[in-house]
Amino acid sequence: MSSMLWRASIVVTCAIASLAAEEPAPPRSPPVQKAERQYALTMEKIRQEMLVADRKRVADLDAAIKIAVNAKDLKEAERIESLKDAAKATMEEHRSGEVTTGAATVNLTGEWDVTYADGATRTYFVDKSGKISLPQDNRTGRINNGVIDMGDGKLER
Image 1 (cartoon, helix red, strand yellow):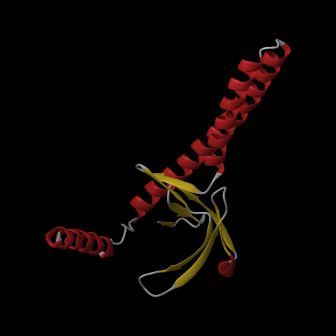
Image 2 (image 1 turned 180 degrees about the vertical axis):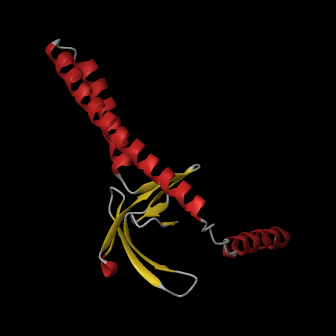
């Protein structure tokens, strides 16, 4: 039993050590910044198009519910209502400040105190639509897939 605990502590220690490893600084060259900015803008455009599609889907499902109710097909109306609830949940995800990376989804909504390598600190406020504000700098921006774009030509992760 003690050898199993010893092995478990090694695994935990290794996992903690790998998490503590510092990530290298991202590239800062203008072509990379331009590519990242273009990517963020494209992803925001896609997100906006998804919201339009989501709203249309919910409206179409509302119309289908009315048709089912008028036809006195309550079972079908219930099935459509269930689908509409799922559609609304999907729309809320598209509105939110959540970021999906691989299999993980992280909700970034809230207040974030960030300390940079040079010791500078900033407090970011992220709302559920992905809008970011920096009150101390009187600036606003957006977060798209984990990339912060404050509209100044510089992207942050």
